[in-house]
Image 1 (cartoon, one colour):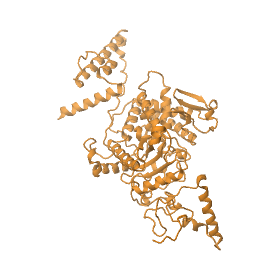
Image 2 (tube, helix red, strand yellow):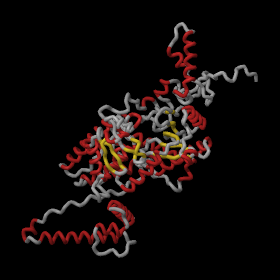
Image 3 (spheres, one colour):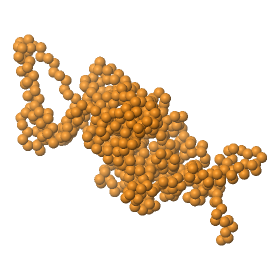
Image 4 (cartoon, rainbow, N blue to C red):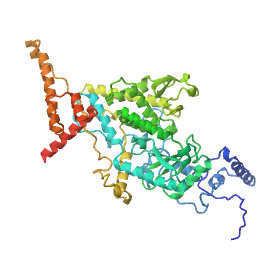
Length: 589
């Protein structure tokens, strides 16, 4: 073939400007100046230049050789320019962190939520995408069959437990996400031999919401062995990897988004098979260290994950959970909850969940002064911002939390909307207090106490779970897992929560007649009832736990927990209630 063009001549094409060419930066100054010279020459040759011509014809962009796209034959799903990209691919939905692209696939425009001008409302209210719709269940976790009780503290605790078990991942969701990581790691190892792919963030902690992204970090062999960063340390390397991911066809066409100039560069895409969103970073182990720290805190504070799940949902409904828009990130939420639990009085290993949630909203919403005080967790404590050199540059309108794994790092420095976040916490405390106060003056009613703060439109959760359920049930790739992770009876909502924590019985009415007959009658009756309670507990334990030997005639609450091998009261109550239910079903059959 005759070569008419010298090899040194730049090769021009019309590539995808959002996944191929990196934005201009200092390291590419020469290329930028070269393009400007060409553009100036073209503009000078025109009589009436039109400003939009260069943009529409993509004259600004230089091919990196990753694609072989042409002007006449663009790929079917290629973006049509900046405006088209911002408006979203009609086959995908908006790839930005909005709530209208949980499920991949075409959707009528009339059914898609239009992204608002801002990702949160200035008053901290629930954003449009999650506002309650007439006729929909705004509290799908709430058990309406539960018997009403006077004990509102126990009712709030039970509802927090119900919400946690409703929103937490189902086993088949874990399988699908784990399989995604396995597939993607195989592709990365083909390009970078010896590399490792690790999950971190909400997925690794098990606290991810149904529509959450999968946060992944790719570690190079040199970083694993020597701590030396190698992967994607240059802008062009990031875009080269972007092109490779697109060529592997693991991503939905048009879904890849490269954020190369952030403090932590990432590549975003939507997995073609599952429709799950993926965020990929490189040679950074801070997220893995946070995973280990979370597991340690979870072991010391079992209540922490349950409170975190409610707080995360509360902020998500208001669009205040995204760090890029100034919201409070997942690990910062974990740190706030853990810090509160660290300062509880000693001996409260099993605090009331309702009380902890109220204390959280009250303390951070009404009492904590984030403008002057910072938080540290190892060791637990607070500090004045001006006493720490690393926080001198921190403005008064930012929250300061010392990274428990790196004392030189402020993990919440990007939360510029912290004032709005804490104001929402104060309003949540007021709403919960009003609900409890109103319910205390009424006869027992089985009503949701959390509805006032996290009630909303959960259709996206149902849709996502149904989509993953159908995929898990019908795709040949997942048949191999059906023996170890059976198909649930109902898509998305089949895992029943544990039996509720029984509230303490109400105090018995005073025996006025016996007190009038004798001043010693009342104390004798009180002792007799206590002994009867010990005897009933022992009888119940013998009936439900025939495996236990040597159960005495009378047994205290603490003795029952120890003898049964339970770690706490809640575990014993759940186990015995479950055994009673099984026994009743067996007798009925």
